[in-house]
Image (cartoon, rainbow, N blue to C red; front, side, top):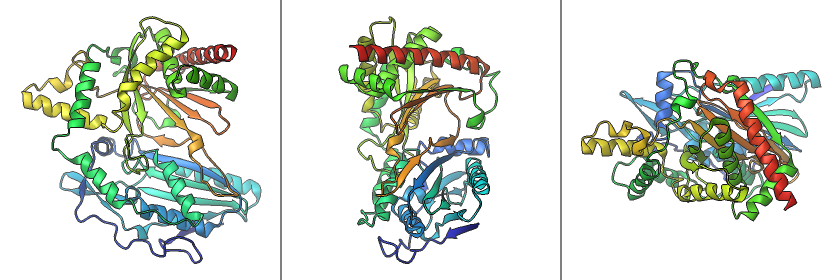
Length: 470
């Protein structure tokens, strides 16, 4: 077995640009964005836990040219500045600069010569090491790529990324760019200027009419919304933050036929599969928790019109879902669609930046308590107790002829919300539902999570069946 770090150079015979960039740093260090700051604070307060590592595992079946793949990954790092993020200390604050792309190395582990049983054991060991990996925040690389060569027709690509550098939306973008370079296609213009401009917009403090409008909308929309802290979160009994595999959770899988029925319901109601799932989640919470008025946090890419941006941009928008009565299915989906429509335009309005703006407004008015006011006054909540995240695994493809790629569910190790529903749409069009207790509070025990998930799956099966019969 050979573990070979590939130097940050162009391998001989590789397609694509002849040279990687020579200079990777900005003229001066940049501030951390509002989305990055909470991660930095968490690192300081709870050093080493959580570890803020995201892991994507992509299996490549087919004859891969290892040198071309390494070069494609090096070119990807050169293309996307966020992958070269380096956090440095500046007094008591943190700033970010960029590593030189030529210093990035891909780690190759050649396991092809091992007996099958030993090889699979070594693959499991390396996957375990990747899941436990902790990045050194200050001064080190916050992106890591490993290739496990299992034989001439099978390789495994491990991509590890610190959340302060970029978010999970990044993985499909990395794979698409690397596949493009691997195929020998002409490189697009590097993203340095666009990323720097975007980061400057995130950290500026001059008035932003769009952010002001977003805060006005939320303060009106959230006025009178209930606070679910007492119902879901027991601060005294909650255990310290866990690694995600240890968090209480319940999981089930909906067969492709059920998902197809739900998709037909979405078409019939002029909505989307996500809206149908959001409505069903609301109905399940309404039934299980007697919760007719919910504020649900929905994870969105946060990129607005810059869909190809690699950055820590992921955002949460807040949807207030009122289900005072359990109407027919089409009406319930209609309510979810109506609640979702106005917040879609807030995708790029960082929830962290909105909290900062609310605090500045409070200071300007001399009302120190305004930013921490009860939710009845329209406060942007510091914690969102209920959240939902929808991930389409069909987008995470290394698109090269002759290669079949499959990416497993991205594993992330950072604190979650108290009650989080994660949905993975699989390659075969099945749907995995994963309900997680993000803080280990006894009020959301495994039994209670399973009961709530049973309610949700029953609703979805019924909706799918009824849609198929209509």
